[in-house]
Length: 453
Ligand SMILES: *[C@@H]1O[C@H](CO)[C@@H](O)[C@H](O)[C@H]1NC(C)=O
Ligand SMILES: *[C@@H]1O[C@H](CO)[C@@H](O)[C@H](O)[C@H]1NC(C)=O
Ligand SMILES: *[C@@H]1O[C@H](CO)[C@@H](O)[C@H](O)[C@H]1NC(C)=O
Ligand SMILES: *[C@@H]1O[C@H](CO)[C@@H](O)[C@H](O)[C@H]1NC(C)=O
Ligand SMILES: *[C@@H]1O[C@H](CO)[C@@H](O)[C@H](O)[C@H]1NC(C)=O
Ligand SMILES: *[C@@H]1O[C@H](CO)[C@@H](O)[C@H](O)[C@H]1NC(C)=O
Image (cartoon, rainbow, N blue to C red; front, side, top):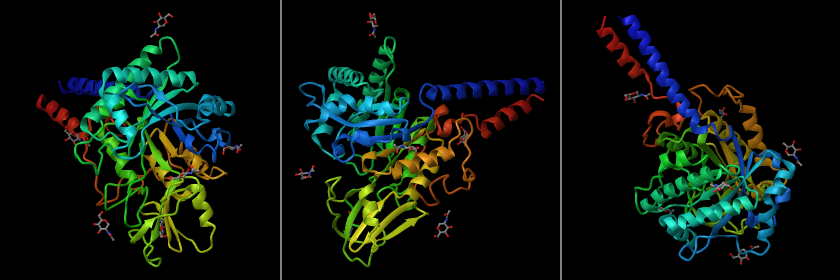
């Protein structure tokens, strides 16, 4: 009796498990098996022209960005008004692909990373209206196709109302439907979304801002999480993009874990790594630890042309000054330097190495660098990420280059005492695409079986 029950039980377990597994694979099998992306910022093209990109370091490059016209009149996508942008948009894909034909390009439609900006309002109005959504989707896809892009990216920074979140989901679903329909006649277009570092938005006027994870996961090829810029208006020195942070939610490990726990399969999640740093003037140059009081944002540098923001290439320059002291902390995985009264938090090659290993360890689809325009002439950051990823990359089975795949590895999870995201795992979309048959279910089945003996 039990023998047949056991075998039919095992058979059904296998079937269920196979079903869940195949559903898992279906989530990702149409997309690329890895993403090593870079965002190229068109606004910095006079410092970092398209011709200076080493296209062999990436699988995907983003043209960042275009923004919306005033959505109340029409939802047409307009190119940036700066003279000279249009020829760059027209030739971006062909220039890139002439040196790496297998590279894919994506056109990013973005809003400014600033609350209450006009571009955020325009995006919000467009996403709320069915006709404007349809018009936006048509014009954005047409613009991407006309300029030989392989995909479209929506980078709304950030939805700030619960209805914005719902509308973003609807927009992505409609975009996917249109792409699938058009794919009957022309080549399919990639669709990605660029999002906050965590699936829940912090520091907003309302506490119920969660991304619609299920519809996002069904609609896009992958999700790019902006894992940096954690402390915008800090009055003390702090980390721009710590991997681990015991004291707050603001860390890359927290954000990535939150997306995975919310149900984005790792094979659809891409982790952001900044190629820029945050700078401050110290109040007292002897007090130069993280958390030290500051008097102002750091100096305006040539490339970013903003106070408090520094390109990696400019940081590297300042580090050559013998008076600057560089610190890498392998516990939180941060780097900073101070020089006189200046204090700068940034991702050094050491940090990039650890983060890329973290991404591989969590079996993420890949990483992206933001922006590659801020890397140095030798592409130090892009090259570091590329080298570490490839050293750790195995398409079928994952094994770390130095054995860090052990469960007790510091790469595995936020450190003890670290805040952990609230989990809502379900079926196939739980972390790492494991299926939902777990030991307690198995125990239940087996004890049922013994009832029949
Ligand atoms: C681009 O990067 C690759 C990989 O590191 C390297 O082999 C190649 O020489 C680089 N090309 C240029 C033009 O720098
Ligand atoms: C595909 O092409 C056919 C024939 O040219 C046309 O009738 C049809 O409307 C097209 N479908 C789409 C989705 O564009
Ligand atoms: C910095 O700001 C926080 C709140 O944003 C405040 O609690 C703290 O006292 C401030 N610290 C200093 C040194 O001004
Ligand atoms: C830098 O910013 C200032 C003010 O924000 C602006 O007037 C100036 O034109 C900018 N410079 C460049 C090179 O973009
Ligand atoms: C981290 O840094 C400490 C102190 O510098 C060192 O003793 C330790 O070996 C480092 N750990 C790792 C994993 O690199
Ligand atoms: C296993 O399933 C039980 C019951 O559904 C659940 O409470 C438990 O958290 C699951 N364990 C894991 C590791 O998923």
